[in-house]
Amino acid sequence: MTSLTQDLKRLATVPLADQRSQTQKLYRNAVMALLQTDPFYGHVLSQLTLEVGQGRTPLELRPTTTDWRLRLNPDAIAKQSWTGAQWVTMLRHTVLHLLWQHPQRYAAALQTPAQAGLVRWATDAAVNDYLTDLPAQAITSQKLQQLIGQPVLRQQDSAVYFQQLRQWRAKQHASTQPKPAGGPAHPGTEVAHLTATEGTEPTDLDGHTTWGQADATAAANREQWRQQLFQHTADTLTAKQRGTLPGAVQAALTPTMAEHPLDWRALLKRGLGQVPAGRQPAFGRFNRRQPARMELPGQIVTTWQKISVFVDESGSMGDREISYLLGQMAALLAVYPAQVTVYPFDTVVDPSKSFDLQRRPQCLIRTGGGGTRFQAVLDVLPRLLQGASGQLVIILTDGYGERHLKPTLPVPVIWLLTSPVAAFSVESAPGTVVSLMADPQWQAIRREKS
Image (cartoon, rainbow, N blue to C red; front, side, top):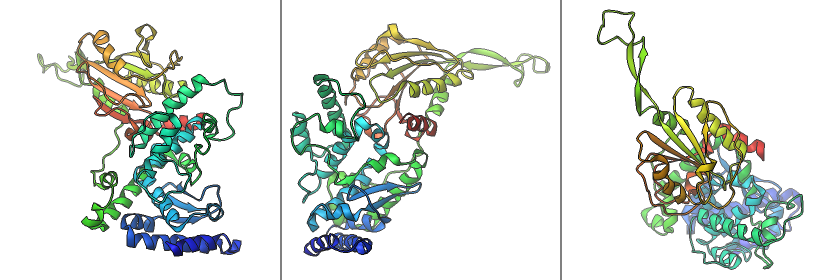
């Protein structure tokens, strides 16, 4: 890595006009070194489209409508005083962000300033636990443990760290004085001020803010490109080379069958149309008793469904987004005569605050705002549904709650998440889990809100 260290030092001294070519040479030499010593990372980096620009962070993943591109910023790189080994580590760091879908999984969370710093900590800690030769200020799970004063396991998914950080920040907010009007100067500042420990603020070794700039309507295109990128890389590796990779990396490289994202409206329609609720006349059918008389209508089976919708009031969804989702359900009632009851919940379910959803969009007024406990929903189902047939349960949530649940009633459940499915905290959740990340209308509402 000696030559790479010299390349880094040379970048800080070359004229401005030569920075671009020197940066490209620095990157090219690093890729060549990785192809010889760590082919997985070398093959991934050799397929990325490289951009050289100007920015606050040394390197960042920038979204387009078709892919993610690696942007290097020469001035920021020159200011870091990295060794060649640390430069290569930061390139590996970026590859792991892409492998574990961090840019896509946390694009929505980064649009909320209060969560942006937590996203940087959580995703960097998840990645850096698998790397060596890290810069001194790099965030790891050990540093997170020192920060929050609670046990933090190593090499966990970023969603685990993100949830721990959210709980820690909530406790910090409860024990500090109200902040002045206007909020923090930039994303992450609020988080940094919650601790007096020097060096624990979110780092700017690589940029994350560009993740939140991704066009949600093109998410499927970028995901297809990402899968092809790593599938091609996996095909080029030998069994021995794959065997030297950490287990979490090998698992992410395991080929999986591509599936179309589930349409939550289609799931509702299917559920609404399965339970018989009597018969109604239909002139498109022959009358079975008197088939010769064309003026007599036949009959078809009508269906109905009782739906219980539980709205997580502690999540990242605002009143407008929830009203949009309930409005979409109300539109279906014009076709399917279902009875829909909405129950707000946080750590408990209060049936006294429930209301019936009519055949028109309704405005939701929040009544809760505590933590999240999904088991409270499952525990209340036997009392609310009373074992009646033709029931469907829908849970609208951001997906951050406990990890394990104990089912209480064999009823169909649809989990409708405002976060990616991979970020869902529950392991082996009963029912069907669907993310709204692929719903362009919902994403448009989120962008307007921010």
